[in-house]
Length: 169
Image 1 (cartoon, rainbow, N blue to C red):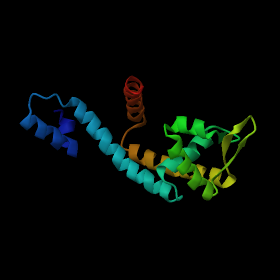
Image 2 (image 1 turned 180 degrees about the vertical axis):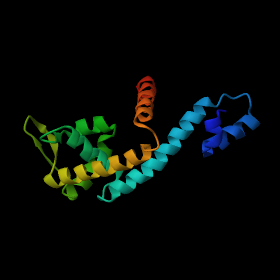
Image 3 (image 1 turned 90 degrees about the horizontal axis):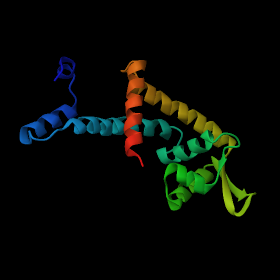
Image 4 (image 1 turned 120 degrees about the horizontal axis):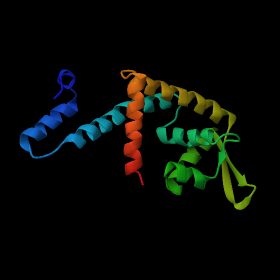
């Protein structure tokens, strides 16, 4: 263990040491990475939930609004496209859309190009809310990364991209 690692310990270090004691034959290098990724995701995720909650949004609802916002003007997508982008069933998407429509953050309307289809569009209030919520979420993420230099954060992003590309199919 390097001197730096010996000085700074986290709960994953204790888990790795326990496994080394009871199963010294195991290579726990992957557990060190994924254990930390899981714990970090939970810790930052809880803070993200709080940031979005200030706008009366759950993370899934934020994701719908953010997907519409990222699509660019006129901030309109079909429910099917939203479902595909967010990897949700159409049933799961319908529940989110219902709640967001009742809150006045989006509206559903007939698709002028497909008589059987619908379009989902951000309202002005939805645009205002998502713009504020995304800034609040980014502030949480930026604060979480503040212990790393910009170069370290970039290296971490590059490494995670490689892992994601290799494992997401």
